[in-house]
Length: 129
Image (cartoon, rainbow, N blue to C red; front, side, top):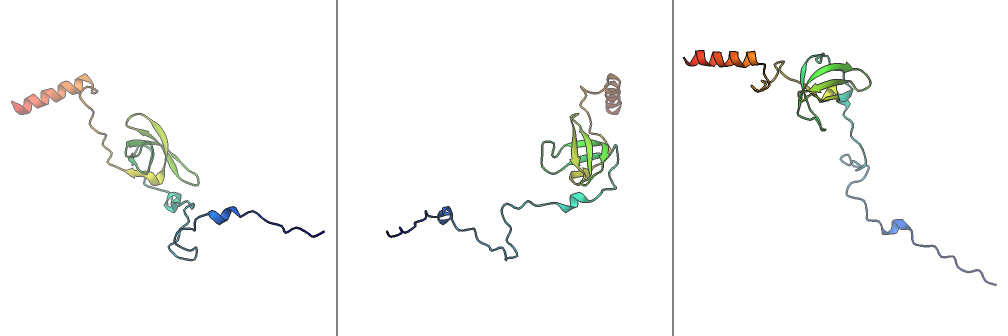
């Protein structure tokens, strides 16, 4: 009896599309699955202290908001606990914090104490009169 010829199914990779332009040996080639790491995040910042006003940078829920540094957290990636002007607390990488002027933003008259509002009105009347 004669042995039958063995047939194998077509490989699943046979129907895949060819890879995008660029070879691994090309200097500008970066695989699409590679994560980029910001090495500047590892640097310790000496200019941040508790109580400083900062603007939260980077991406995320509180990006672009102003906050006050409540504590400095050390570790592999330095960070700080900050409280936003809206009263929310979060941990932010030190590299994402940008120092701003120490003055707090002006509160609307409805939120100011009554003595401050009356002093402002009296000063405005004195300037006009």
